[in-house]
Image (cartoon, rainbow, N blue to C red; front, side, top):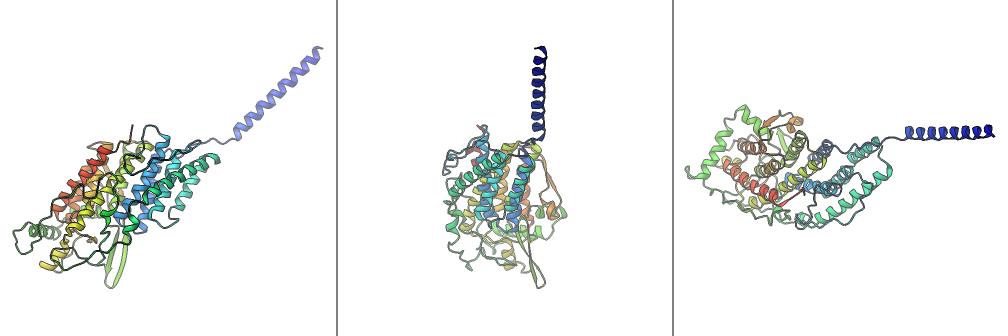
Amino acid sequence: MAGTNENKHMKFRIAALLLSALFFLQACSRKEYKNNFNDPILFSKTVKELNNVVMQNGFPPIIASRNYAYACIAAYETVVLGDNRFQTLAGQIEHLPAMPKLDTADVNFQYASMLAFCKVGEAVTFPKGSMKEYVNRLDSIANAGNMSASMQEASKRLADSVTSHILRWSKNDNYAQTRTAEKYNITNEEGRWVPTAPSYAQALEPHWNEIRTMIMDSASQFTPPRPPAFDMKNKESKFYKEVMAVKNAGDSLTDEQKHIAEFWDDLGTRMNVEGHVMFVTKKFSPVGHWMNITGIAAKKAGADFSTTVSSYAKTAIAVFDAFIQCWDEKFRSNVIRPETAINKYIDDEWRPYLQTPPFPEYTCGHSTVSSSAAEILTNVFGDNFNYTDTSELEFGIKNRSFASFRQAAIENNWARFYGGIHYHNSCIISTEYGKKVGDLVNGHLKMKK
């Protein structure tokens, strides 16, 4: 009887040991899941990938602002669904409808936010498939972290739902209608903008003030004062002095001034002429430059993923509205460029250090959007936030360091003047009015609860 009991206990112990061994083997064979997406630097790389696509496809800065704005909002609205520290922009952007109730079970929100960013960024204006390769890389990162198939599918479904919602909203901003709007009417009226060498391109986006704003109540909410009256006959007139200041500066630029002008050039597409050969070189736009600065600031501040996404979204929204505000004035005043005025009335062989872009002079787009972006980043990361801007290294232009975002915006003013493409008065006014847009966005949008 005792032997029988011992046999039963022995069999029980062996079964228990075998079961334990089985569980151990299963645990060893099960791959550990690692969330490789909770990385704010990876989100900045995702934005930079969009920046590269914008640059390679030659999108002008005004249109680029639309691409970044909708893509960043899509990423932000996805993050909000998984981070209760932040709140939706629906209602804060008055015409942005609330997100429908979505299934967020088993979702990796960081992965989904980057997918939504890429999908919206590609769909807004880009050629189909332009972000596909990068999306495939994101999928590879998910696989490398052993993300389950069910989590990948749930994340993709959420990204698709957010993308559809943002794209439906975007289609009502009047962009499509402005594609077929009447072209700018060029006249010989004195003091009025006309196309410039070497490409003599048509005016860029003369109907951009018809695009729906996000935070401003209209394109004309912040209307600048009238520019100095055109007068090249009276050497004591303010306009004549502004023109001569540009010429005199351009004729005696120091190496430092040339570096400042080149660093903030950001023309996007530059037409180069060498003899009988014409070729195009590409750089990113002012928007792309400030998107880079946002990433640099977020990294230095040690911002987490959601904070990084929100800083991009807020900056992109301000820049989007700032371009609309600026373009509203450009095609109201239609001010002649310094190059045209100097060539016609002073020296027909004079050329600016930078290439003159194809739209009227007043006000300055780069100064406007730089000032608006600087106000947003100051609000997010604080004043006296010193940083080194490495954005231009890829174009062979050395870094510049700044004590604050506002200092960078002010330096950009001088860059446009040194470059010979803007009167300094225009840059000063533009900075003031870009700040108004930035202040409005800061006061209106409450990203964190």
